[in-house]
Length: 86
Image 1 (cartoon, rainbow, N blue to C red):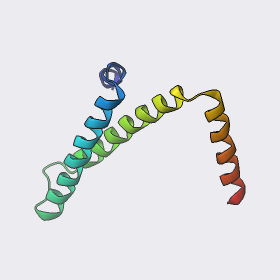
Image 2 (cartoon, rainbow, N blue to C red; image 1 turned 90 degrees about the vertical axis):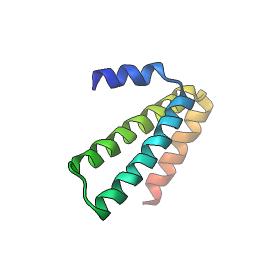
Image 3 (cartoon, rainbow, N blue to C red; image 1 turned 120 degrees about the vertical axis):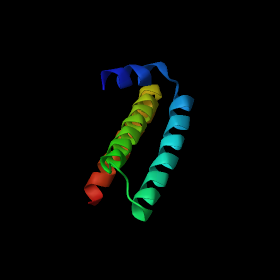
Image 4 (cartoon, one colour; image 1 turned 45 degrees about the vertical axis):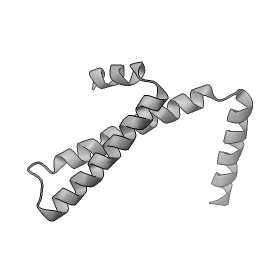
């Protein structure tokens, strides 16, 4: 886990997006293979899904870090409005 965090820190956003795309393709292939013939270790599907989520979280954190204070204020207003609508 710690090694993976270091790996994410060294990679740029474009690299992360490319990695996410390849992992999603691999995930879809794993799901198909598991449905057709079964996998030796079906927990690999769960691990891959969680890894994809980690990468997507890192990309989103970087997007939020790059936002200006005005953009963040607009974002929080939108979130508050959505909460009221529920």
